[in-house]
Amino acid sequence: MGTSLRIGSVLLAILILLTGCAAVTLDKDLNLTPEMLAQRQLQTRRFDTTDEQKILKTCAALLQDTGFNIDETETRLGILTASKDRDATDPVQWAVFLTAAIFLGVPIPPDDNQIMKAFVTTRPVGEGGSQIAVRVVFERIVYNTERRVAKIEALNDPTMYQSFFEKLSKALFLEAHDI
Amino acid sequence: MISDRLKRNALLLIPLLLLVAACMTTHDRLLDMDTSQVQLRSMQSRAFDTTDKEKTMRAIIATLQDLGFMLDRADYTLGVVTASKARADAIQAPASLRVTVTVRPRGEKQLLVRANAEYMRAPVTEPKPYQNFFNSLEKAMFLEAHQVD
Image 1 (tube, one colour):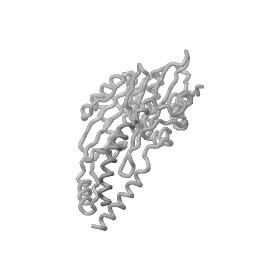
Image 2 (cartoon, one colour; image 1 turned 30 degrees about the horizontal axis):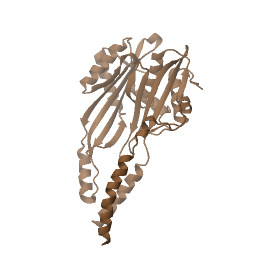
Image 3 (cartoon, helix red, strand yellow; image 1 turned 180 degrees about the horizontal axis):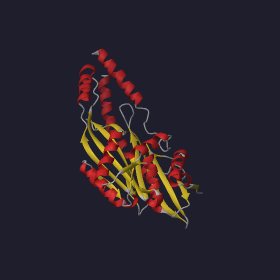
Image 4 (cartoon, helix red, strand yellow; image 1 turned 90 degrees about the vertical axis):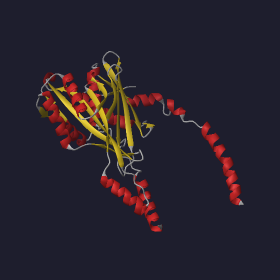
């Protein structure tokens, strides 16, 4: 019991120490970096149309089809945001949680639910605005069983974006071009 | 014996603490006036040589999206955009940055863009983060940002 308590307190101390560093800082997060521009590449497609409203409408319908609720829109500025609340339970995490709780006496609460967010912008591009560029960003906030934030992360898997644009392309009957 | 007295003292202390805690307020934060307002406004504002409000607001939104922000609110009529960026994982505690950007006419030929940032529950009062933001915005606007008074 004594050793497990000691290990527990050491673990806790390490955790507290580590939580000292912040993931978003004033120094770097208002500065455009090449990585940010690479993200833009991944998250943007161009469509041969001048009908920006139609694209926004189709995006809204597509997000609804995938279970999102629309949060904020401003057609004049080409903006659409949506979110959904989903289960985030992971059996592996639960196994770790139970092991840690039983053998170390340290409860590390497992993930419980996640808010997934989508942020779509559209803007006319090309000569005389002959094309519309669509950019979508996905992000999620994961909460643990103690209702605290466990994770906030950008979703950067290229396949997610590819599949979004494939669906959008089909719904619009238009081909999606890379920027 | 000693522990008995301690207990009695503690019992007296608790209501006293509650009383003191009830008097303390944090509501003076509502109208935070830490730095000189004029100085702060000047580092938060830039003028652009354009009167195209829509284009300017679109550039602001594109810049914020480039910087990894998620949009909270946007209103063309009011010329207001609010966005935030937060990250956290198993080893890093949640940290968030929130920015409100407003656009309004400045004279006949210019638009004034003002950004207000909030970081980890405190207003951002250093000039550097605002400079970085306006540098990023300049690129999206293809226009130079002019310092105002």
